[in-house]
Image 1 (cartoon, one colour):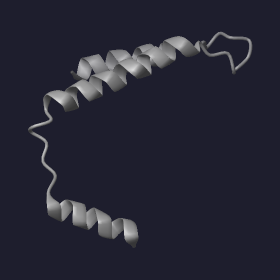
Image 2 (spheres, one colour; image 1 turned 60 degrees about the vertical axis):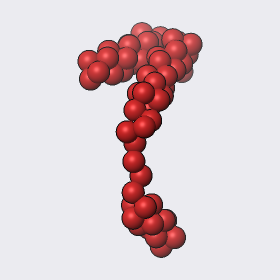
Image 3 (cartoon, helix red, strand yellow; image 1 turned 45 degrees about the horizontal axis):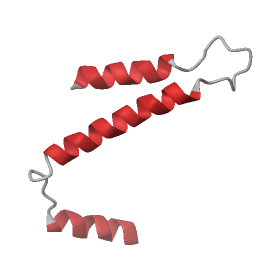
Length: 69
């Protein structure tokens, strides 16, 4: 899984046009595709492990207290 993330990150960085005349020249659609792949991969991991996820009540209360302070 770690190698897949590395590959997707490398592809999203490579897809930026470093040889463009203007720094604003970016190949947008391939970058969006790479970000979409990463997002879909994360969602699929969450979906397959949805029953294994546990949220502790004490953690939620502690997080809520930190936000209010």
